[in-house]
Image (tube, rainbow, N blue to C red):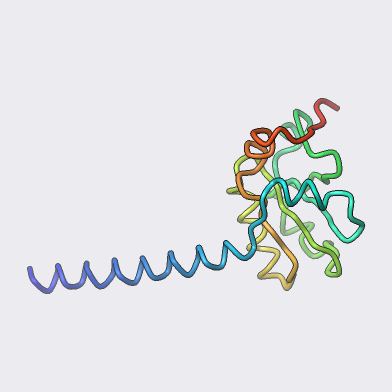
Length: 131
């Protein structure tokens, strides 16, 4: 029983250390909705909305391009390597996944918009609705 408890304790320690490393990594690749808003018209910036086309049509950032996460393997290699790429979704989860996939594909200037469109809306930032 003691060996089992020691093993569980060791595994929990490793898990916590991995979570800390992940959150440190995430923090440096995360931006706020306000940062995206302030950079959105910069020619060196691309905003990629990874939600479904239906979600994108309902509301979006005017400058955003829709590239659904479920098709990322088809479009990730087409992203410009010389620009900052901001990924957006509803809450920040899918865009975080897209940011990590793009980073693994060799893209260095990729960022996840923290809190997604929910946070964008809470900030009172402008959205486009409908077709």
